Image 1: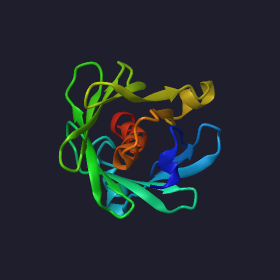
Image 2: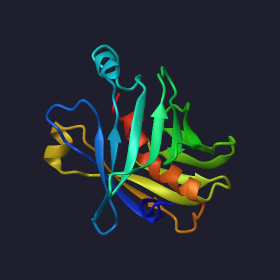
Image 3: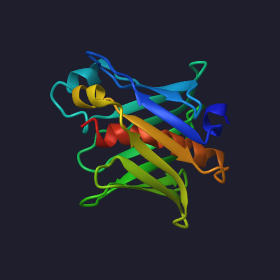
Image 4: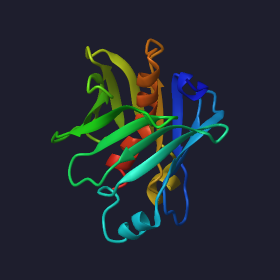
Length: 194
């Protein structure tokens, strides 16, 4: 497992750009040291479709990179009309699971499953879709994802978000740690970029 995923706290900060064609995030550890990045990959066709369709409907591909710029995980979502399903892959392109959006009226909810379809975690959000609790298959808390205030200027004039991901030290399964750490940026894409 890459040391990126060994961190119990990750700060995911969306980069600001005057004219952006794709989303990019910098990732820091609890001490503020940059440990990697998350970059969206878009084809020309995807960019063209973005002129006519909402980003919330379009497929996406996010690459999680370590500090050396090497891809250590990948997230992919196909075209979606209503509920998103995002697939998670390890650095070798092997499926480790997916998370699926569940229908709820007020608070967003996702189920994180492994590649065998077994529930690894449930992710429950508040009514603003800013703060999330991650619960294991036994409904015990194993992590949180919290949106942080970025300052008045950044909040008013950009769509850039900052998330703090906390994973309980008791989570030792490598694929579960990769999946939980991968979720925050994809949640931003699923819920905020549309």
